[in-house]
Amino acid sequence: MFRFAAPWWLLALALAAAPVLAHYLRERGRRGGRLLYSDMKSLGRVGPTARIRARALLPWLEGLALGLAVVALARPQAGHRVEEVTAKGIDIVIALDVSGSMRAEDFAPDNRLLSAKRTVETFIDGRSSDRIGLITFARASETRCPPTLDYEALKTSLRGVSFAAPEDDGTAIGTGLTTALNRLRVSKAKSRVIVLLTDGINNAGSIDPLSAADLVHALGARAHVIGVGSDGPVTVPLPDGRRVKAVLPINEEELRQIAERTGGSYFRATDTPALEEVFRNIDAMEKTRIEVLSYGRYDERFAWVLGPSLALVAVAGALASTWLARIPS
Picture 1 (cartoon, rainbow, N blue to C red):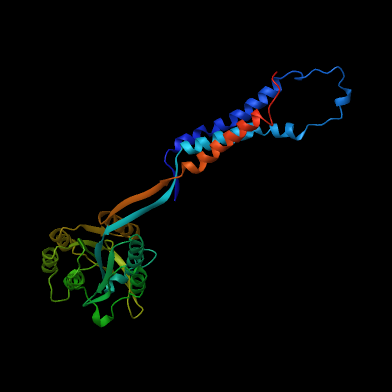
Picture 2 (picture 1 turned 90 degrees about the vertical axis):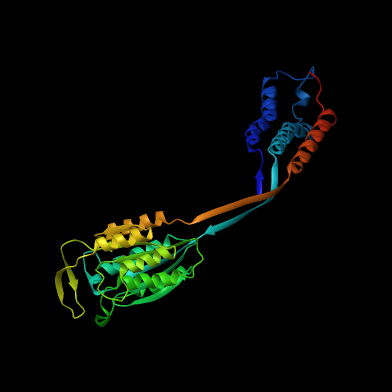
């Protein structure tokens, strides 16, 4: 890596033009010749000699020498810089409700589950050094992907998520929380987080959601809980092809208590933009701490330009006083 330790000296490079400009002004202001002749006719056919042409180069040599001296003052250096990045990551498990009520079409242009999947994928793309896992739950829960840094594999698992089969339908929030916690139980991360997304009321499973929340808190994790769904009747496509209007209530009080007992936050999302905003908020809340240690070693290279500068000064001085000497005016 190359750099200048005192780059402000480079502003003085404009001084390199001074010798050339001085020569131009001196020649322009000179009147007549240095020698007087009685008859100039015999000199009319004589052109400038090589010495005369060479003398015009002296100001350029002096300007180049001055420019190199300025570059030397800017202290050119060569070396390398090393950066050590230490990231204290967060382990996150997303618990996604896949019960039949997630078919509701109040999250235009898709249903609740498709909107949630798309938003979660955007959330994953915004992380870089955190392990993220995915579990789904309906009447039972299932680990789709354990916490991993392989985000492409995680997103492939996410894209394959679909609704629970009719015989497995239900909403076991406590079971979903417990499965997510099991994925974090052996984590050595300094921060462990569950993001629980559901649109229903706990109506299945053998584990009470608030008891599961106490377990989450006891193991030092926290849960951010998202209740999804609009108020009032919504259109719900059924597996047999029928479409019905239904009111799908959410037990917001219980969801809020889950978040509070674990030290997390509760959010309500009634449409796709609101859900996207919720995940942006969670992303901002759960930031990975990154420490950067930077150090470098550089060697001075000013001699590389100062040497040629002094050599040019010596050459220009020697030529000006010998072969390119001028007759005094």
